[in-house]
Image (cartoon, rainbow, N blue to C red; front, side, top):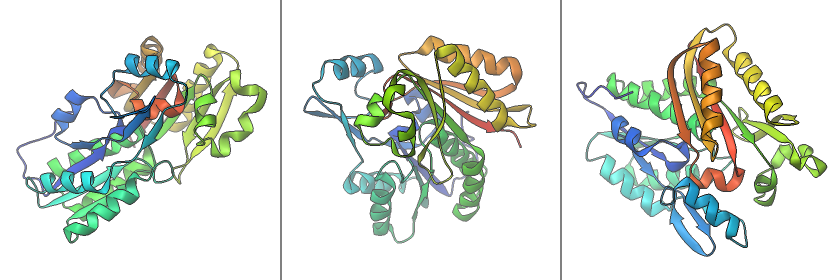
Amino acid sequence: MTPDTSAKRQFAVVTDSTADIAPEMVQDLGVTVVPLAVTIDGETLDDGVLTQAQFFERMRSAPDLPTTSQPSVGVLVEAYEQALKTADSVISLHISSKLSGTVEAARIAAEQFAGKVSVFDSRNLSWGLAWQVVDAVAAAGEGLGVPEALERLERAREQVKLLVGVDSLENLRRGGRIGAVSSLLGSMLNLKVTLTVDENGAFAPLGRSRGEKAALEYTMDWIATQMGTATSGRFAVGHALSEERAHRIAASIRERWDATEMVIYEAGSVVAAHTGTVWGVAVWPAI
């Protein structure tokens, strides 16, 4: 996944921490990641400062659910200033505008750069966003200009699909981001619930399952639907305090499809603050 550094890039790529791209991969890709923030027990920290284990330990002991916040306009302006030292333009890809105010903050920041910064709403999050970042980096490496890269990103945005499986809806309910998923609440909070991000970038319910085995079977059926007739594709499997489960899902995927790329990743603090313990699968079929 290391980008081609031989071709001159016409644009740099900026994203945010909800893409859940590991630091070493951020370096390999050559992207700038602007952190969102999480406030836990009165302390505000950038996403990624706490390890996953540290975050969950603090969340369990905190009297209130952690809250999250978008990057400030000033932080985004600084990121664009630095990125423009290495390229003529910037493409800035972010978490869905239906889930965060980050896109709006980025658009305000971009106004200061006379058209040199293009903001792209991924209408997704986690590796649903990250695969789009990877595509933007590839487009830059191939020497594409901003207009061509944005057209290509629109296609990737349509093709990349994300499933999120939560062990409990409690965090989403308490955080007010349950939206259309409210029909799954009430006495059903003990069920394993799967969600997706719809074409508008909002959470939408997929299904509910009694027990992990049934939930993972549903996950594999969902992947099969997204793959359609494709026999190969790129996959990313995420987790929060459930790495072993993520590896089991990845192994099942490899048994059925040619995974040209497979990423196992940890959900960051900002994402986990809203989901609790979770698994996720981002699918990008080879079309």
